[in-house]
Image 1 (cartoon, rainbow, N blue to C red):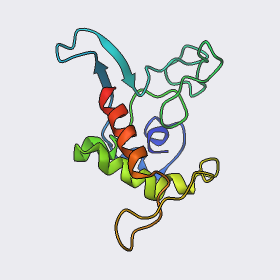
Image 2 (cartoon, one colour; image 1 turned 90 degrees about the horizontal axis):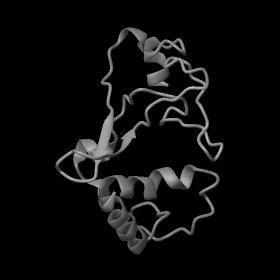
Image 3 (spheres, rainbow, N blue to C red; image 1 turned 90 degrees about the vertical axis):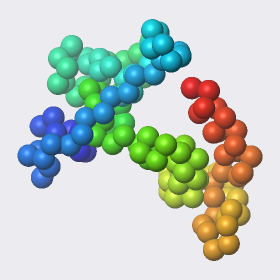
Amino acid sequence: MTYLGQRGVVPLFNTSVDFPQYRFRFYTDGTRQHAVTDLPPIPVTASGDPDDIVPALDEHGAPIVGPALAAQWYSTDPGRALISGDPAETVDTYSRFILPGIPSVGALPVHPPEFPGGPPESLGPAQKRDLLRFLQRL
């Protein structure tokens, strides 16, 4: 909503506040010669107008959208892993607090807490390790 408010699409209290505008480009290696992807994805709208919030569809019929579920040029939220530099912190947070609250994911097995007094988790230790290995390869 912060993004849509900053673009003036949705009237919010924050339209007069300048928020950070993050765009990330990932490359195949440190030379930065061959870009792999941009996050959020480069906006492609149905009308071609970059301020249009109706996204175009990809070759599979899926909308080309960013985290705001609309075509967007930037994100106002760099994500916890970018701030902390520790993707494990993010995976732990999702396992403990985010995934259990998503109805379609709620069917995930519940794993015991990794520390005494902690909340049950959606992902087990091996699943977290596998996910972190996958993320590090991206």
